[in-house]
Length: 613
Image (cartoon, rainbow, N blue to C red):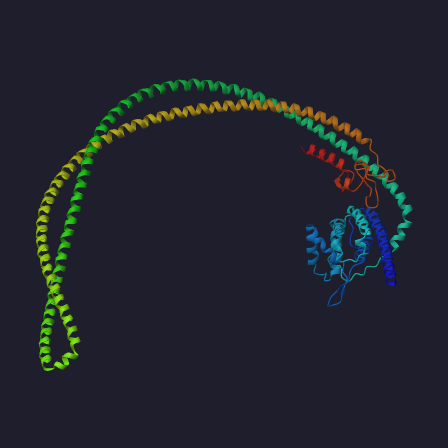
């Protein structure tokens, strides 16, 4: 029960603190706006109401802030939640980089104060804090549940801060010690505000009268400017119209002269064309006759040349085939000689092996005789060595069979040698006979080649004479082509003159269209003059509305409240909300850009664009 009671007391205290801070914030913002409007200039950092506003805003941001513990100690800085703006609004990255790059500021509190100064200078303080309030789930990491930024009072304060966008602040952060400033709220401004309410009502009445006077002067100036501009435009249009008429007369005269020149050129071109066509026909007939004679002679020569060339190719092929056969026979002869040499080597090797085998046979016979003698002497040893004798007998049988086989091979090799020698003799005779025939054929071919070369030389001479005749004909063709080129150039000149004529006709048509458009523009400008006069008549009926007379916005019809404030349009004098009168334009009665409603903004921009055009 005690714990529940303490929680209820804590929440009640928090609620009272929130309400008190919200009321103090209202008073400080009101004092700051009124003092700024009275001064009618940009505020400096030494301006006391502005300093008081920053102290109160710092207390509001610190309300319910969680304490972060570290090795150094406890840290309670409001710059931590402000850093969330950099993630949520990428546009604010420049402000954070500027605050972090300031060399004089070393603490997070100083950085937070510098950020507040810079965002107020950019007139985006309310927008950035509104982004934080829209993301309360992220603020819960920095603030306790009953904090001002987590409740409805924070949204109300952000709505009040929207009114500071009409103030121009020029704050210099260099040389200021923002780290060690002590934020103390001075309540004397609140007391002064209560005493000054009566005097301010009178001042408000005077300012309304002055505003109405400025408004009427501005309307008169604007009307006089528009009338002067329209008169100057009418004079310019009359001048341009007279100039265009003069140019039209000159263009018509020029067209008449060009048409006469065009007719003369047409007659000349027709005459020249007839002459050139006659000359071309005569030349073409001559060239056709010469070409036919040349083609007939060329065909006969080409046929003769092709026949001789075919005969040459056939004889060359025959000669190549005979040379290939000669090379093949020479290769066979060399292979036969190599085979004979190899056979002789084999015969010598086999004779050596036969001699060795005969020696072995003699040795075996001598061994057999010795064994017979030993058998007679030792019959007892024979009985023990019968098996050895049988083995030796088998070996001797094998040797006898091998000797017989070798003798048969020797006989066969001798027979093959005799056959190969006979074949070699026959091949030699055949090769000698073929070589004689080939030599005779080569002699015949040489004689034919010399005869063909003589024919070729005679044909070359005829070809030279034909080429000379061809060159003469080419020169004649070149002269005819030059005549044709001259005719084509005359045709091109004629085409150019015809194009110039068409261009002049187009220019005449375009100038006539321009005159028609100028007349149309003149009629439109007169209609615009009448429209502007009607608009000016309607604008003269506007009056400067008082704050008590308007309960809602004239454009969106939404009722005014603490968050939705009243704003006068400096052009029409009606009262609008901030969203419907967020535009600013420079008027003749005000030196700086002034707040204007959306409709007046569009009207003024249309007038400016029409004046510029």
